[in-house]
Image 1: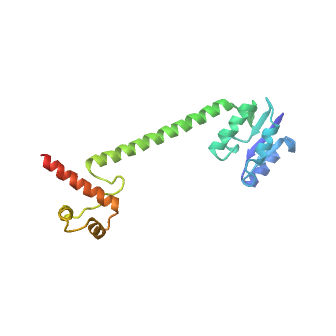
Image 2: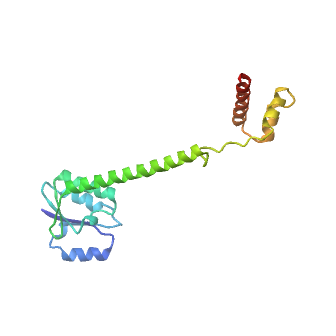
Image 3: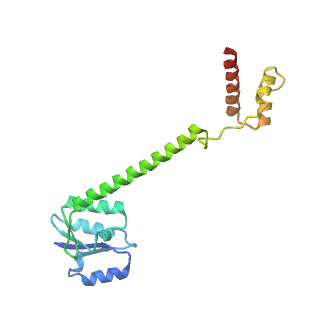
Length: 188
């Protein structure tokens, strides 16, 4: 049995296609923007092995690539033959392979571009240019001196931290780094 399907958002196209077909109305299925794939689902329920599905062109099956691939896979599973109105036989397997190839090519290209961006960013990092992660807190020049004052109990950690406006964990992390640098200096 022959059926016709098209996704035609433009109503003028719809009328032109309907006038050019020699099929009964129950063999014609047209989706538009309003009834998204409702007619396609009805058609799939009717399609049987070796039925012929006529389409105006491949781009009239779906407006989206993912949806087109799903529809082609459905036709392959049903073993329906896909033809254009001009009686050109479209091999669904070849079209699915082509779409897979295009998808893989796009992913590989995106990965290469992403890798190039990462390499460029790492190169900047090694040169000391650019910013990566959170920006480092700027420590005042007299930070070490004030830590020494705190060690001599002339100042409290909480008072100095509040004066700097740092979060507690950040403050103590920097204090630890300063103390570790003193230990390194003592070992030398």
